[in-house]
Image 1 (cartoon, rainbow, N blue to C red):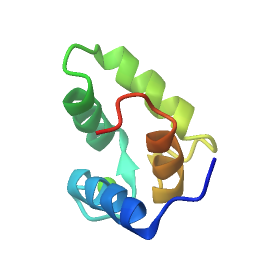
Image 2 (image 1 turned 60 degrees about the vertical axis):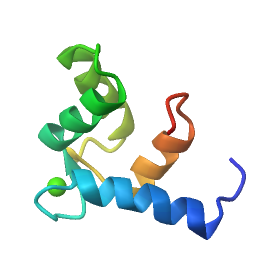
Image 3 (image 1 turned 45 degrees about the vertical axis):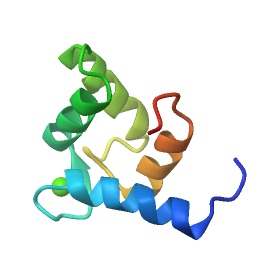
Image 4 (image 1 turned 180 degrees about the horizontal axis):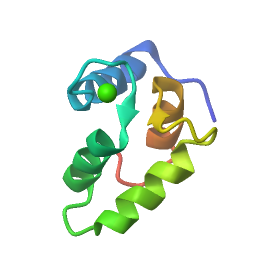
Length: 79
Ligand SMILES: [Ca+2]
């Protein structure tokens, strides 16, 4: 992955913080489901849950910003 510009990282961070509704600094499953629905309105809940499990590599039950950034950059539906 090539280095991201600070502007790009800041943009992704704003998305992350927007969906981090409780301000925990992590995305929990419920928060991720809402985000996934925005990105892919036709998606099923099971797809969101599978995506969450794939991003949450250490099975902590939450997605931190680094995990989110990596996922975001590797996805085709980047805004
Ligand atoms: Ca949260």
